[in-house]
Image (cartoon, rainbow, N blue to C red; front, side, top):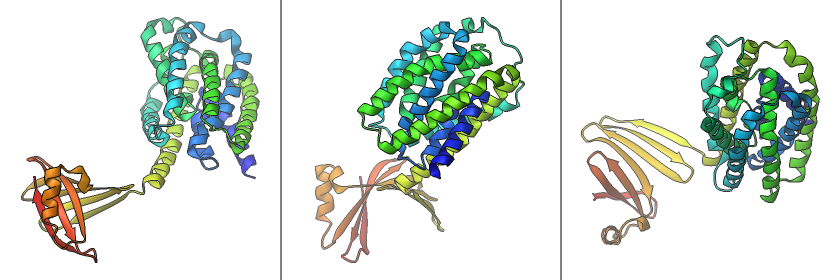
Length: 346
């Protein structure tokens, strides 16, 4: 049943992608995230988007803008290698959070009057270095998340491409990146049996949706095409933001407690294993405190704290940031974890 739901979702996403100028991958990321570990989602998405790009090139080969592709591809290939390699070091959920906010920011473009015509030579007004930079960014983000989709639609609109040209040129720009990503994901061990099964399911949906474009795109005006593209960007951003927030919450278990007292206002944030405390003392000003281990202090400070420990069972150290400078606070607890004393030192 879950595979049927994923197939319907993928078919819907790629059909919307045909009408909106992209976005299937970004729409599928949060959906596939419920069936696969987050690190394997890019591999499954790429299987589908690679198949989609091949089918779109076959259908719209005659309208590919090779003058843009030849500038875009070299830096994009470098970017996708860097992005895939960074999967081992970066948390994709934080990148998804940033991308989602950017996508949602396109909401304002929905209320602007859209162009109804395009200029065939408009690409000449876009400097080559900008095309190369967009290629690098597109490749890097695609390598990390497995999809770029409508993220750079605004760039293609600026180049003055019509509906068919956007679909065809994007496919030409992305198909080689998808092949590189598939190789890199395989070398990183991100392909498992379930990943391949879901990826092939997405690929089948992509092929079926590509056949629809041949009949849909000629009947869509440029203004409607652009508005639909921005709508897809905002929708993708909302879905991605929801998934990123959920993943960040599960990974870090954040907790915020705000306390109001007569002499101060304090906020305590727990983030994963880290604890941050902000205190606004009405007579001293704002202070930011961060729990640190005793071993992080200089040798002289460690000796000073140990000399005052006495019979305390446990010592807690906080580093205090204030306008007047950095200081430290030491808390001494008994074996019942009750506070015995507190000292402040520079």
